[in-house]
Length: 456
Image (cartoon, rainbow, N blue to C red; front, side):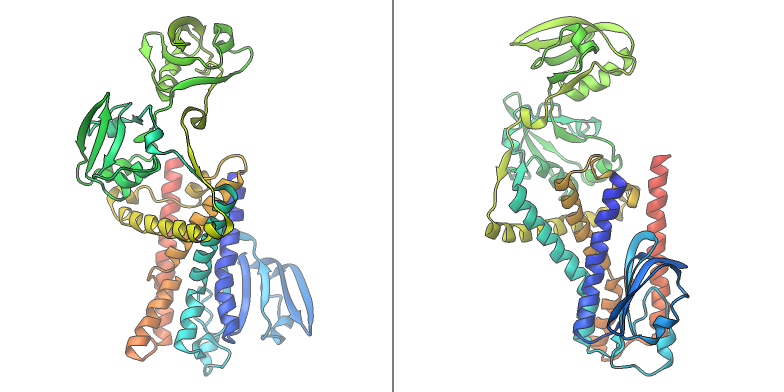
């Protein structure tokens, strides 16, 4: 299900991106030879073209089997390839990833990209990025209108924070309550991680058992955090309040009840759910005691842990423990709010980019495997659209980077032309395209290599 969600999400984004190039090309009279979802090396699943006013379709054809369609070059060929990654929009007179050089043998034609005015070529090139970003803003606005914005305010996290060894190394402890970060009171609990990892905060003020304490954050501490992507670092402190019990399991047989709080096993104190989760594993298949709090009193119950190291009880959801805040938006309110959220997402991602160029950050680069893991295992519309919007922003930003073969590379050459009054030579553009494609493939395979390394 995760892979399916990723494929659908990326397919939508590729269509939107290529549609941006397509629409501006058509607007300025540039001929679009092909418009494809997915790549189609050697053969194509389905393609169609309007010939003499009627649509003609071909299924499962070799790419060379289109000689009869070559008589109608003015009409765009639409298709779906068999390799479910990416897509492309082939614009006449443009040196692109297809490396088609045939058009260079003749003088520029009026319908070609290279014959269009500089500002028109600028919009054709940036059309994909523009459409992706606008699409993300539309998704964010739609999500805010449909579901509102729900978050845990820091002030409502009355049990405080739960920390791992990395956070403890700078003096943080379980149960600490964050009061301010660099003198600013964070509104959302999620703001804590962003401030420390992305904004490189320097000081934390915490409340520990009623006493305010200042904690200094070491320089470049964010690199230490991202070096272990599986660590918790700082998360909400989640007590183990029992929400439901599976029949005929150790929890039921021991006499546990809904509403009980599990606070220990054997002689080990487990004030948080994560503490219990780690502590119970060594007792798999063994008889021991479980410590609970019920109606304000402690009690110890004998229990035999399952062979899997579980007791057969589910904890209360975070929303049943803490009071979340939800903001609702009217249709008119959701539009500027969506634009603001899109801008914040872009800014957040741009700030993260500098971490990629560190030793620790480069180790966390991921490909489609990492992207797929972000989706829930069961279909969830809110999560699907949220990730689609995020990937749309990322796709827009990545494509505008000044790397040949990406939209940003073409844009760089247009800026060069704007200031010098001269176009780069076709020979230079071909070489630049080849270098750019090599860079893109290197990044792709490096990310894939890192993902497979983490898997195995």
